[in-house]
Length: 558
Image (cartoon, rainbow, N blue to C red; front, side):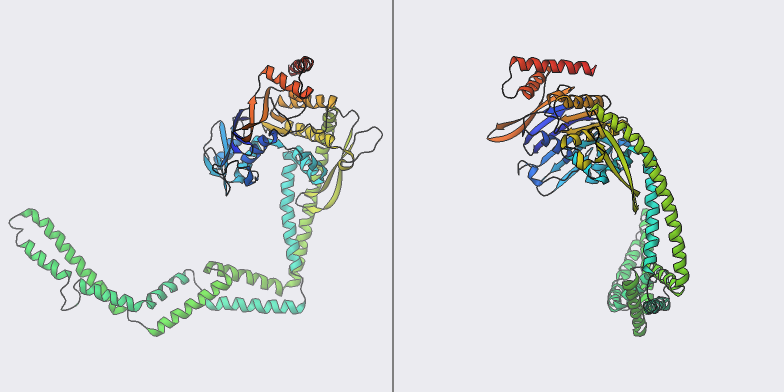
């Protein structure tokens, strides 16, 4: 669950901190006070795109930090996969500047994709206009599959795998369609490329060897000049006094005094070893210089070979291994073109088998969806009745479409809210308030199946009032018995159900407009409900009404 929210320098919020509790957390306030900014800041921390305009002051970044309790969830397992230290709490933060933003989990910098992966396990946010997505049938299929859980998702993964295989065969078969002249040209070009690679007779690692030989030969004169100078310095050149002469003189002088101090013998042995190493070094240089005679013909041959290898790399791959792979691919393609009829027949057979398997898997997915649809229909009808749809019919209409990675189903939610009227598409029947209640019904049903601990509803009460508002408040209260619910509302019926009640107000401080949030006591909550009931003037009668509403809600909570 969400334990704490800290926001700084974000939109109208200078700085605020909220400690949320279990059950139903209600946020209320006047229109425009900044209630949705609170939800916006949560979304921002969880990786949503935000405008640079949310940064309140150019001098400081906007900061949003969320603290979640994650004990008993899968989150810690996922964090360990990301090599992020974890315990029973997870801290997600985002620093937003005009030029960039930085996301962190438990102090480790992460990508927004990683934050979203974690957020999906922690929180589900229903925005103000999300219910409009119910007008899109693609959303209906998504809801049904989510409701079906692993029984559907596992089959859908198989369908996606076989669809990919089917499309690969289909694409390959489409690419084999060519006239005889095009086929002959393709064969001729492939034969030329194969011959070019095979004639080169490349060997593994040859490119590195040839390049090293070329580099050495191209710098042969420089190597010879420098080695000759080294040879002279070390005493290898005749007539030149080098370090070997100096070492010999040092040995003679040291030998002359070792009889007076036996401890000098070790130093003498070290000098004699150095003299031996110098002699060996000079012999190696002399051998290298004698063997390093520049051969113009060998150099030209090496240069030509290197050019050939580099040309093949430019055409077929930047390593000899990739050139070999290109050769194998061209041989396989040439063979298929030389035996095009057989190749086409083989592809057609593979395509038929792939289509057969895809059809079987799609049919299995369809049956699983029909079974899940029957259960979902029953639950939705019950939930809608609990939300004051007194006469409601709900159907899930399956329509077949062309194969896709999600199968062959197109799903449409149909509803009738008035007796005697046939079920129709949601877009032609449901009002904004009805869509809000349908979405709430779906959210509550999904909440029964998933393990997401926190649900946020931003103005789920759009377009409802009276008895319907009371029913919605009771449904939210029911959901909050098994989940933490955070809800922004304008309705006193919902606010009265609060386990924790927070007031958001807009004030002017230091000639600047800011939004503030504070937790309300029981009596303060009553006064806020009275404001929601009575408007600007709060009379004793309105207060009594608010207190009675709060008392009745308390009895429903028991």
